[in-house]
Length: 392
Image (cartoon, rainbow, N blue to C red):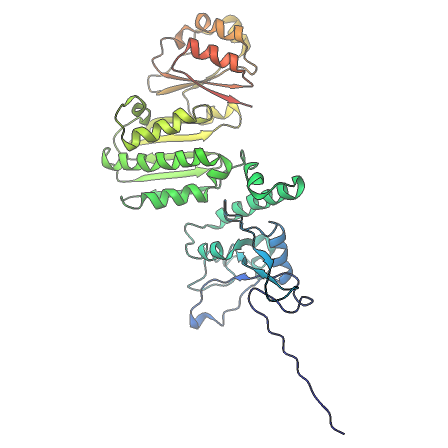
């Protein structure tokens, strides 16, 4: 009797699958570059289920800030085939070696392949984060992952598209990041990457983000070109940008009065005049360094941890007056936290109760929660050069 043997061969490609029962969701692992002598190194790869969960938790959108590319869709190969440009990347590398980025020897194999060590990216950005472990730190990627999952939650719960959901992240914390620049010629790229990676455009809005980037580049050039600085540092921490340089003493806000259309003058005007109702911008000389802080307050009391050039007024002080308030000559600007729900008659009594505000010679910034347009108008009539920051 003759027996016939038939062998079936199923071929899988990287991005599409011909056997839908065996592979429901197309996923790709973000593999760090390996040299020939490293290919036998054991990798703590994600399981298929982990890859699928990473993708689902961001609704199959890329987690790179502002990208949001959809990473899965139909394939032309058949009615059942799907195609993916998505990548399940390790935050801390799956194995050690020259090409491995962010490898942490203290992690166990189970921790290394756990879903908490993964982030979902499009193919383009998956490759990008493997090129520079200094720029793309573990802490940074974990923040990106959290923000991307928040966006996906808004999309699912509220039915928003990606761009609409992205705007709802305004008010969240920035991704901690920093950069030190010690020579000219690299400032545009380094500062631009810093602003992008810290998610400022997402959390504070694109217009403010662009204005801050423009200003920081000009601030650096002025520090090196006119202030003889040799070091320039930017630290971004949660909701605050701190800029330090070791150049000669200078207050950038002096440029607002400059009529010359230099890059620095235009940048500071765009930043402060267009966003004066949101941004805190304070400058001080600390030892041999200039220090500038840019932030958006989420509550009025936060100003006291940012600058000593600040005071809080209570309704009781408005009733009796407070002549003990003094403004230091070292303050370039002075921040005054007014009581919530400040009223029109309160503004009328200010010049009488606090005459020192009229003769200060400093830039006054009033910070108040729940302020009406009418109160703001009257404040500006009493103090024409003031800024008003309203907190909802």
